[in-house]
Length: 234
Image (cartoon, helix red, strand yellow):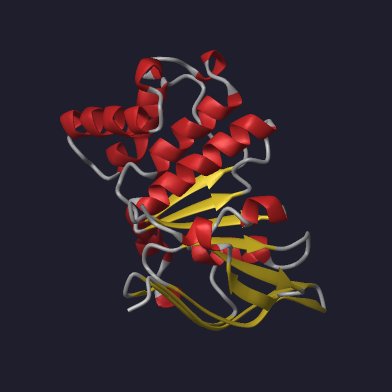
């Protein structure tokens, strides 16, 4: 069974008497372990799709299944649990808490999931080491570069072993070298079997994924595998 199943997803925004369809009968499957880029310019519907995939918004109509859960029918209380346990979010602006260390930021999702302090510490240390920050565990945001802060955000997103890693323009605030380093981290996670979806407007970033889905005016215009080298798992 696919990790993500979208069937005839439609999202309509209403302003007074005006209705704007952001997504139009979108149907899509994403298998476990895929590395997918969803690309489109402003107004294409990719942000709306991100919100639905991340259980931040309900579709107006259609069905959304995530890891076997019929999520489009669930109340907000259950969606909160799914967001915490099944989805890891990575944002362009990092969203790290400034008064907490790298270690404490990564521990937060596990704290909300009520993991023990020992598990929180060990898991956070393991993840920060994995993303190359073994010597930055106790550093604060103002002691980290933008690329290092994004690595902390990736580690935090992985804290509860999510089924889905969802990244929204994750290199948008980084210089080219730091951005390339972050994409390399994603490629390594993909090789380890992590399902990753990147939302982007940049074709060069999309080429780093194994599959690229292009949106235009709320519809899928193309869905194709990328070049063979990025689709090869180690």
